Image 1 (spheres, rainbow, N blue to C red):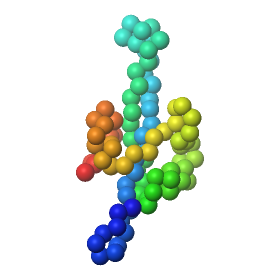
Image 2 (image 1 turned 90 degrees about the horizontal axis):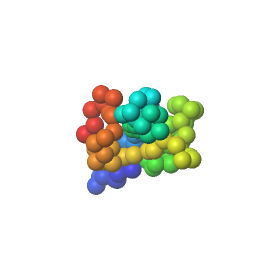
Image 3 (image 1 turned 30 degrees about the vertical axis):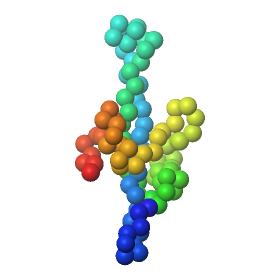
Length: 94
């Protein structure tokens, strides 16, 4: 949440990042031993804090999980812009 000089509060935009595994049984992926991992944006949420953004995302899609080794990530706008390898699925991020 960003507090402006006139006392107003503006919510922060968060993005839920998931990973997709691409694994063809060819020498490109080590005959199945080395799958390619691609990150992509699943959902965009506006909230005051990261924790509240996680709760909103879970209410929108109950299959989203942020725990465990292979859980989704939640990033702010500037973090998504820094990571150029994330597939934005046609979203305009500024």
